[in-house]
Length: 111
Image 1: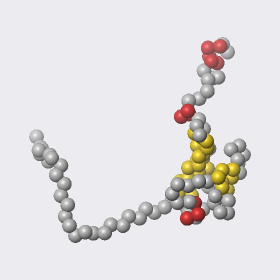
Image 2 (image 1 turned 90 degrees about the vertical axis):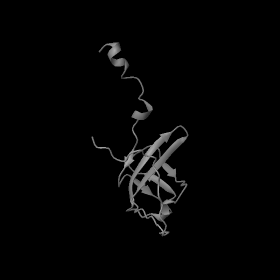
Image 3 (image 1 turned 30 degrees about the vertical axis):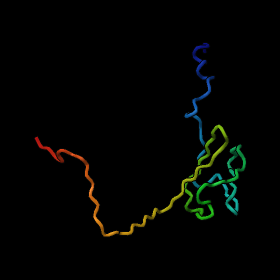
Image 4 (image 1 turned 120 degrees about the vertical axis):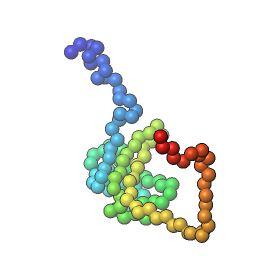
């Protein structure tokens, strides 16, 4: 092969094209206290300490964790967890009516 044909093969990939390890149900193990995650499939990042800014993983069962994705950013590695949770919204009826003025000149025009 000539040099121009192999030139682009040696260029590093763009930041969006890098491979992010993703685990569905296997390939990782959470510690008993759910503060650490260890990857068991040979991923060389090792063991992560988990720091959560909302609820920790203690509140969720292992059956609710659907996917784990490892993302590398400039300041380190991050784990993203996809958790299957039923969203609950509580609405307290006020008994009052609310009207919204949309400022439309005509709501429907038929030619």
